[in-house]
View 1 (tube, rainbow, N blue to C red):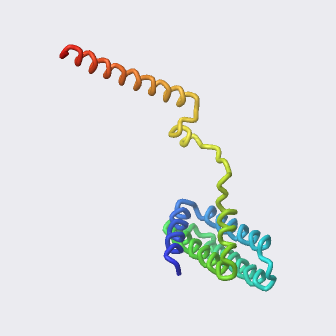
View 2: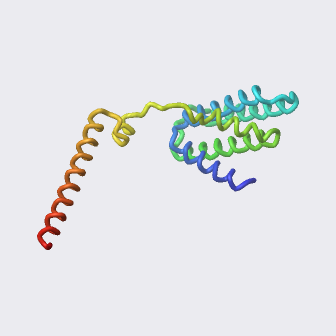
View 3: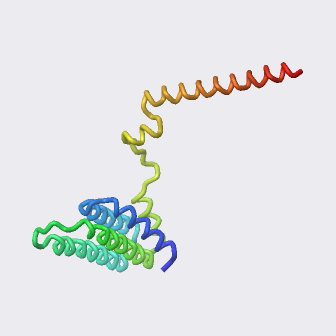
Length: 168
């Protein structure tokens, strides 16, 4: 296993830990769907495509089996199980990507592009607006701060200039 795989798995797991169980399972299903779509679009060898499709189906079935086992008696699962689910899902994703890579390494890049499109513009939420200054009040306040800072710098420079003139 490449060291990057461990790092990617740790990043994926840390992201998943921030999600609730339903969101983790949805994320896994979206990942499997994305992998399946990329394989169907770009894989030309029928035998390899069938083998990878079986692995993806197995991963989805395993996810469904875990769903059944987790909620078998309609119990409320303790929150401490959620990091274990995040760890299992991150490991499953890594194993799926490794299996795909063994068949066709170029597919991994295409899967990553499909999972994380770069040209997709996000609409910022309220917290991002407050920090990035995208609202009108924030733009105005930033402008006032800039003008105030410029005025303060000019006053300081004027004071320095006048004190130098006194000494000359």
